[in-house]
Image 1 (cartoon, rainbow, N blue to C red):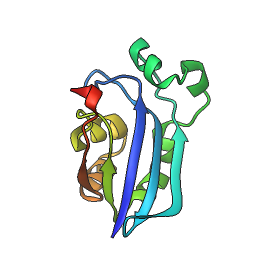
Image 2 (cartoon, rainbow, N blue to C red):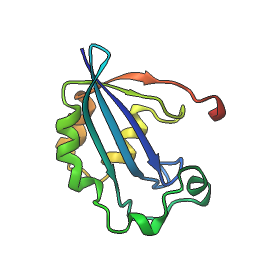
Image 3 (cartoon, rainbow, N blue to C red):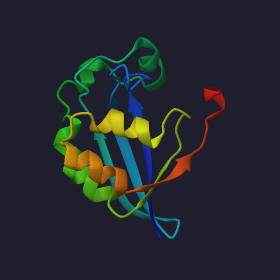
Image 4 (cartoon, rainbow, N blue to C red):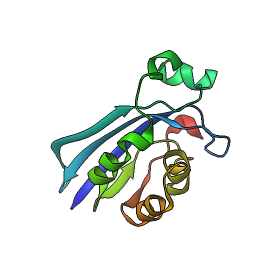
Length: 131
């Protein structure tokens, strides 16, 4: 079984308010063992991070200015997660719907539709401090 474990940092906690992913990191597991394959990028969200988010991740707005936009790495990302179960260990707000809004707001429709069927979300673990 192929799984991808995904972690992100964001500009804030509301994709509905326009918050975006600023860092994405993935590791691949086959039969629950690390394979050594990874996917990692810092991303230019084209907006500033909220002050509270900066306190959590410490990734400055200035640092992100010359980083790629997600659309520029989206093909590589889709290739990495293709045919895998996708697992997150992030706050309880990080649902497949949030994922689609935060990542795919600027993708052409066929990518958004394809992503919805590509990985199977195994779920997420609620962080104790997110209650």
